[in-house]
Image (cartoon, rainbow, N blue to C red; front, side, top):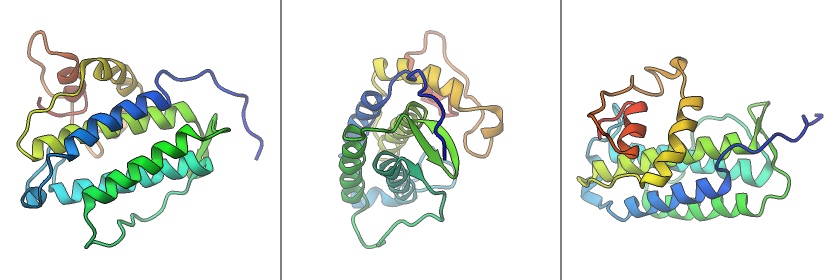
Length: 194
């Protein structure tokens, strides 16, 4: 396959992915065994299902950073008896390591389609941060997304989340109170009520 010319970098990249993961790792500290069956802001998912989804997403991000390609496949959550939080933390370290050591991932192939590495890392950062907030809410905590991170993610969310993604991947935008902070604006855009 001939690679397209190197793109201009998208805002964020690996640094944005690292900051989103750091926020989410803090939320994972709130998870207890008793919380696994609690509902999440993600419709029809309890906390255990959300953690499984996050593990699968990090596995795909790791593959993108490590190999420069992701093959769309059936979800494989691994051994259901394993600690999903420990697995997620381990995958987070491996995923970040694959991106920080990547030498030629200007382009990543996802299911045969080329995307810039910046689009892949920005998409991953958005998903990781929003699901980090979901985890905290499911555990009964209000843990806002840091304002600087939310400020950087919101314009990316507006590019990445389209009308075609609603209502299947994302709920419709939620109403916003006057003078909402950056995190609340981001969460409202992706259909969550902060």
